Image 1 (cartoon, one colour):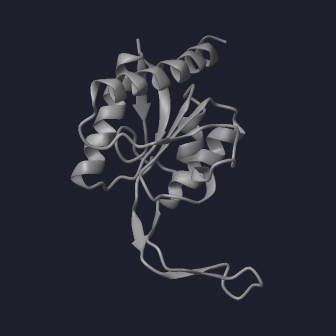
Image 2 (cartoon, one colour; image 1 turned 180 degrees about the vertical axis):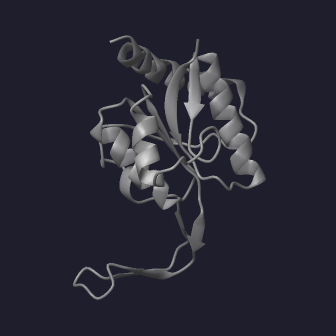
Image 3 (cartoon, rainbow, N blue to C red; image 1 turned 30 degrees about the vertical axis):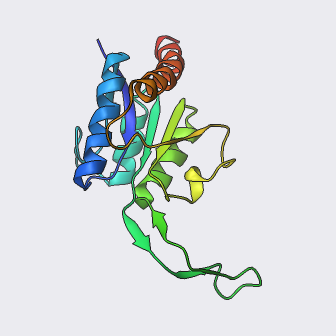
Length: 168
């Protein structure tokens, strides 16, 4: 039997992103975990998406946050119109806003969280120090044997927390 975990991941991914998602989900399956997410494995019933997320999260024993780039900008302003306004001239990538909502819900119900972000993704849960967890780089492309072993170690350590939560 696989233990359900809530996976926060954008529905629409490019080929490289979807390959990374499949890699993560495969490794999670090897650890005895099953990813559940709205739009892929579960669907909105007769209530709002946020209520469905809360209901699904309450039936899970862990949370995976996959910060894939969904919007990229090459320039802009941070904190526009305030004394802290800063011009941004570098490329900045943003994940789906649902990552932030879902991470907050999962954090609030005290589930063990595992967070991965694609290079360049930042803000909220993807900012280092925003929570008491490590932000991992998204495993993109073909992994060396050493990187695959390191990924499995990260997943197995987190899976131990998920298993503990499930059997409590």
